[in-house]
Length: 143
Image (cartoon, rainbow, N blue to C red; front, side, top):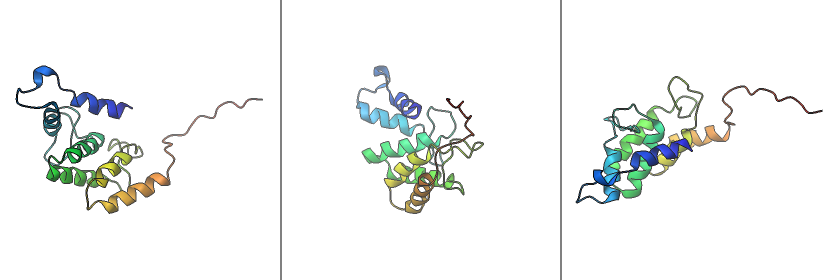
């Protein structure tokens, strides 16, 4: 559950960071928005590189609050741009066989219209794959 804990940590705002006229929800959303990049992607912390999981979770937060639908669309387009020819969203570009963020992208795309094709491709990919990324060692057989 590392993915969830990172976004929760990134959304925690200490009392001294809250502006007197800003409610905690608004402050959390503004904190998320400050982590957006010009291409619509998001990072977990300011100054970090794009992360597909954080981008998908940011779309869910933006859509739940109806704060910035243009940014949501831009973010979903960014997720679409990294959906590879095998229809998955990889954790890292240099490790394309990892695909745990594909399900998060599906959740983000489901919030907006216009991403049905990407969703369908990703769903089909997940339904026909097992999640095994490397050869497993055979366990000794019991006699």
